[in-house]
Image (cartoon, rainbow, N blue to C red; front, side, top):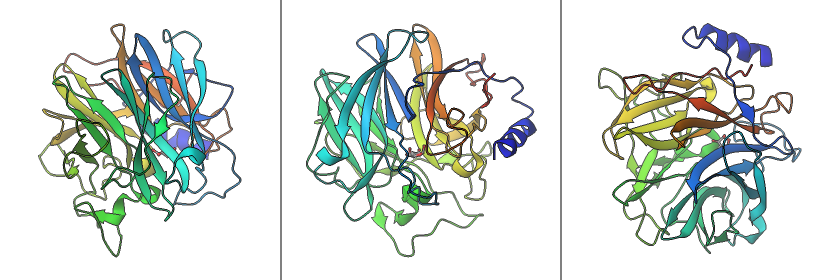
Length: 340
Ligand code: FUB
């Protein structure tokens, strides 16, 4: 498997150099790192991988996580501090199983964690949990967000004080169960030559606990202004939404899942449309790839994970950080998924 990934990566001639990333927390398996700057420190909100013994399948049942920890860093080269467990599946009244990717944002000195978890009917929903500090503990609401579905919430605060959630993931993330925010039967993906299933974007209510509108499709266009097709597996959205802003442009980045790339698209407003730009991160060791991007002290960083320390077990991932750069046109210089 590792050899296959190396061969696939070497085909991508644009990305020549191995990257100079560093593992953030060698003591345990943490994945999907969502990183933000709060109170002048970097806080990281990862998924907490564990060995549950559940066999691998396309539903992702082997990603059977049960709690979240929070980590902080005074500076990128420093040791991370583990603030310990801040939310447990047992404490969430609507819980079924599988605490997947989460993200946190701040409003008026309160911290809101948005997380994905299966409910008692084995359907992924998005939940909210509140804290007074960026390091928790986070207290969950009694019910999931009304009208929420699928996985991988990314909470984005725009400069005008509006907050948005980006979410969705196909295959095990169940996005293919829905069209126009409603469950459909049969729940199939579009055909290869049809427009790809889109990630969703929604404005968050002023109390931060609900959607303030129906989630909208976030359309990713190719350079000719055509929506990406479902069969374009090296470009179309799979999961792992992230939004950041650079020089007044909106950068939506995401994983292509079964082709193992982190790609990005640029738009002029939080809803899009967005135009596909290219690859940020070539395949890492491990099936999933998932990331976040932030600016800290004038430099930009990509937080992500790979499965090198677990010997390629894709459900046991380790979080990492590497610096990224933009060229003069605002394009992100691609990073090699394999570290030196
Ligand atoms: O960690 C569980 C799932 O794996 C995430 O929600 C996906 O983005 C993938 O990284």
